[in-house]
Length: 127
Image (cartoon, rainbow, N blue to C red):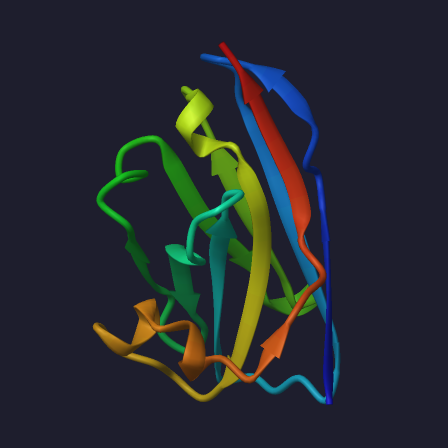
């Protein structure tokens, strides 16, 4: 089992920056994929960004490309999401996801490909 704990979500204003973190523990390995998804009220969960360890590849949703940066600290099994130029449309519950092994696009974008999930951290962007 893998446990995931997200942190860093809060209320910010449009244009602000915010950094989320996701700490993995338990039966983590050295070769895995981690991702951020988000879900706004009344909408489906959507892919935001992913990073694969053992290769360090990153992929982003078009809606956040150029504004968000995903990174990781492999030694601490922690993933980060640096979010800049936040918009009200970025308001959502942000989830961390984990899958053993390396995922490649387009499978990185599919929530069903990730076996482990955190509880989410709320990001609210006011206009």
